[in-house]
Amino acid sequence: MLITLEGIDGSGKSTLCEGLKSRLTDLNPLFTREPGSPHLGDAIRLAIAANGDPLVEATLFVADHAVHLSDVVRPALAERCLVISDRYSDSRFAYQEVSLARVHPNPRGWLTAVHAGWSIRPDLTILLVLPVAVAMSRLSSRTCREHFECLTFLEDVQKNFLACAAEDPERFLLVEADRDADTILDFVEKSIRARILR
Ligand code: ADP
Ligand code: TYD
Image 1 (cartoon, rainbow, N blue to C red):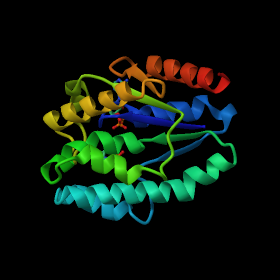
Image 2: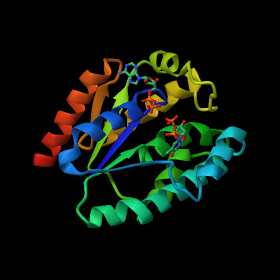
Image 3: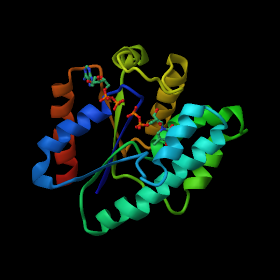
């Protein structure tokens, strides 16, 4: 089973992942993330820092997804392992739909086409939703800001995440992410266990 965690920067995905690691030991899950490819990590960080051509950034994220599927996700699913990924394809549909709008007439069409036929649809996607200002205030202690981490950009990104959820409601679980971390962890742990037993 493939479970993905999605949400804007500062929504609490990494914190939730850490909590799930200690709560779900009996299920022996494989925790993974995008972007995460060792070959592409530096190129992706440089592309994000440069804030240059959004197509370069987008294609690097897609390449990272391909490496992630072939090296990590597919082999783990073949072993019937529970895979939990911190970010996955919905991050592309949410972020790159905004950034590609500068250079492409139909970002969503491009993103749909580029994933078609080879990507793997998650069984469950946990989407952390919160007021963007709350997420931004959580990030304010970070010394280094990526160009993604600005209020208007993240407002559009969150709208796109919600549009993905509205298109595929069976797959998505929306979580109110401005509650305290333990309440969120309890709810998500219960939801994952319920989904596995279904
Ligand atoms: P993400 O991985 O989605 O960018 P993080 O888990 O790194 O988010 O959280 C960003 C910041 O917000 C961190 O400083 C973290 O400690 C804090 N944080 C995470 N979840 C909560 C929460 N539910 N309430 C308050 N602060 C939180
Ligand atoms: P990540 O390393 O998950 O950042 P953080 O831990 O700060 O949330 O991702 C780096 C940035 O890349 C983040 O702002 C989201 C963005 N991103 C995309 O724009 N498209 C993608 O497909 C992915 C996976 C991430």
